[in-house]
Structure formats: C-alpha cells, structure tokens
Length: 218
Image (tube, rainbow, N blue to C red; front, side, top):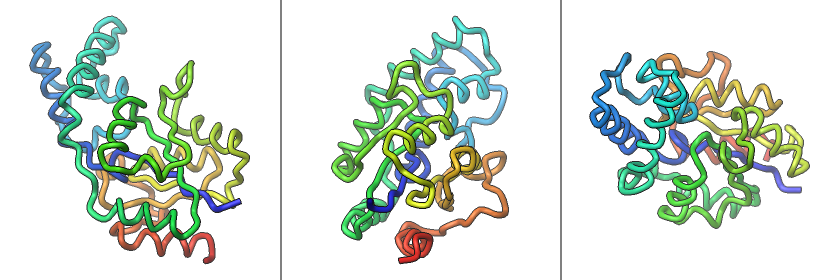
C-alpha cells in the first residue's frame, strides 16, 4: 500500500484567516458583542464552537447556537470567497500524487466549505478521503478521534502515514492517534498555538516534498 500523507486544511493548505476573521467580525457587529480577546489569526484551528466561545466568552447553548448559525450563513455564502491558497501548495499536492503518495484530508473545518474550497482550487481530485468534524453523524469529538478512525477505517499503520499541520492542536491530535507529525511554518501556529520545540517544522511548501520523502526514507 502507498504511503499516506494526511493534511490539515486551514493554515496548512489554505489561508482562511481573511474570510474567517471577517465573518466573525460581521457576526459580532450584528449581535453587538464586544470580543473578550483580540480577533486575530491564532483563533483559527479549533472547531467553530470553540472558536466563538474563546472570542466571546459565551457558553450558553442557545446564544452560542445563534452565533454559530449566523457565522455559517455568512461564511457559507460569500464569506469564504476571501480564502486564499498558499502559494505552491497546488504544485506540491500534485507532485506528491505523481510521486506515488496517497493523500487524505483531516480538518476541523465543516464539510460544506471544505468541499467548496477544494473544488474552487481544483484540489478535490487529489484526495482519496476528506474527513471533517461533521463528515459523520454523530460528529467526531475531536481531530484525534478523527485521525484514529481514519487509520482504522483505511487499514493504515502509523509507519505508513504522516500528518501535516500548523498548530499545537494538530501536533497533539497526531500524537494521540500515534501518527508522526510535520509542522508547517506558514500557518497559524503562533502564540498559544505554537508547536512544541521537538516538532520538525518545514519553512516553505517547496521544501515539504523533500521532508515527506525523508520521513519515509525515499
């Protein structure tokens, strides 16, 4: 079986910060809510509910559900159009497939915007499996559970696989699933989301193919 590269999405393949932050600001303005922390890039990565709770301090379910619904309505419409593809990631992904790797995606992003963006950037054809928190019902509890389920469902071993992400949350999820991990330097792994000192960090997309090949001993 081919070695498998599992990617995170936000902060790893796409720069979703412009779209997500603008949508969060719109939701706050609509509901006249003052954020309890700065509205910046290190919010991005955790599931949507956790992000809104961290930004607003609100944890009452009815109000939280209202804010989540407002975010989805705005973001799933025109909001996600501001999402950018990191330069060089399309070439890297194509080169990985040409080199014989099997690609999968494991993201905390919801399935609908994930699939729309994969189609927009002409990347959908390269991924054999795309797993989001809401891909199944009930939703995955967290990314560690998602990765563990992917390994089991696809009969993969950690020796055959690697997870690529940008934050400490990705690093921890990979560790819990028993997966090797490579961190990318261009995402949202700053401040409280910074990866550990032991993580191997790749500086640019152009260097990622070599780092992955080195990991698998090619």
